[in-house]
Amino acid sequence: MNLKTSGKLYYLLIGWTLYLGWGSVSLAANQGNGRVSMQGSIIDTACAIDMVSRYQVIEVMTLPLGQIMRDGRGAKVPLGIRLVNCTLTPSKPGQPDWSSFVVTFDGLSTRGNLFGIGGGAEGIGIEIADANGVVAIPGVPMPAGKLKEGSIQLDYTLSLVGNKDTLRPGNYQASVRFKLDYF
Image (cartoon, rainbow, N blue to C red; front, top):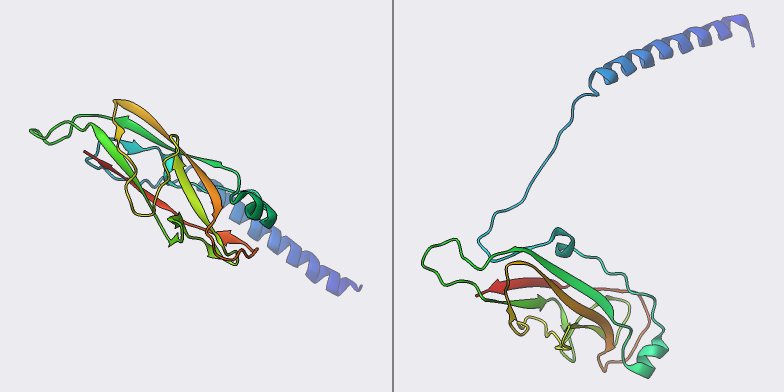
């Protein structure tokens, strides 16, 4: 390496060091700033749905095709919905107090009143049942529950169930919505 080339490299490195040094100073000047964004809604309802319960991703273990052929279903997986800040008094005067609620699950449907799936797997659907074993039918309200002040935990189970179509292995996914109505 000749001195002329190494001198240019040296000046180039000094130039970059000064440039990066000035950048660090300007970054340090902005280190005390920040921003917080917030969004939400205020609704006239008996209860709020706990944020953890609103959007859930439930991972189901890999299921051998033979288990569905033998047992007709996979293992039960828990699903919980927590209602918080429940009140029995509506905000509008003169209306009767809230006393009950119904949950409706909705999504794709398949044979056997099961929730449908997407993907390569075939011959299965998703069954949702409440703590009493009552099975949800897509788009049909579940039996009414009693409201109480404070918090309410609603427990359900999900199961993969054969829907009487030909079973085919593959990946699957499903999206099920739920809504609550109070009266």
